[in-house]
Image 1: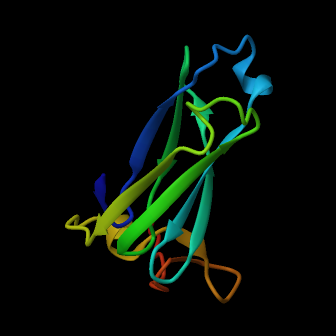
Image 2: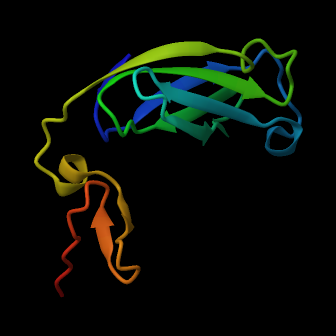
Length: 124
């Protein structure tokens, strides 16, 4: 799969088991690792009805990311230890969120800024 930086990539996994109570019977997490700097981002998967589970990931760095899933039901091969690769290219969007990254608390502790340090300027 390929995606632009800061854009959402969505993966779908199909469970081998049809859980009676999917919200409480199983937990699934995908761990994404950047190939060159080793940055790690873990994202929880969510149940999407039937046997489908999804995870969404928005990469913060360019280049290659790998992922592996882990499930509390380690016998479920549809959810546990699934692996993949995502190639991240520069974004082409003109929207600020895609140019500068996610919002965070600025170093001042009082304001918001984008991931790259650019302040968020709100007007009303």
